[in-house]
Image 1 (cartoon, helix red, strand yellow):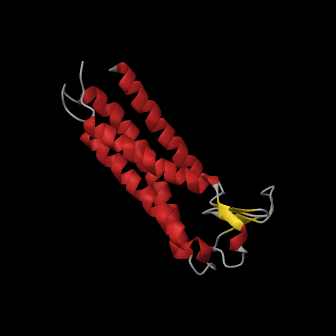
Image 2: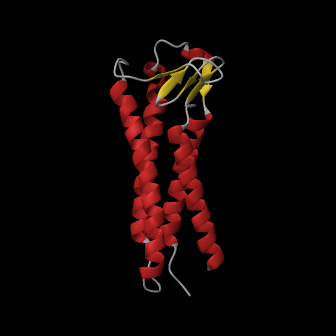
Image 3: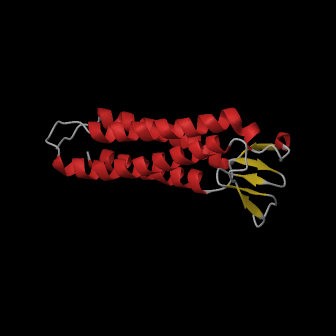
Length: 164
């Protein structure tokens, strides 16, 4: 049982790390001479000439929705880990970690919404850049991996029962 709990904790911490990296780092859309994230645009490979994405962008509300849902998913994932720790010592034997599973499922939903919005609108976010020369960056890919990890961990929490 301790091995299963250790695996779940490591899996959950990995999900949190992936969400932090995907939210903070500036590599959602990458080209040969630019990096674009959900916070700023860097116009050279060394990321020294960066401009924040401001309200002058025509799709700023969608970018703000991505920012908000990524932050919310990260916060929910952290709260899920705390609730798991509390429930680990407070639940009676044989009960499931339903509250933690619900929090993880909400985190999964938030990161899915953010990644789906970016997937459907990435061409419209940065009209001044030559988008055709770029590809999805590792932060975008990590967001989708974090989606899968949070979904799997929420399912694991639903299945997991507290045993001796």
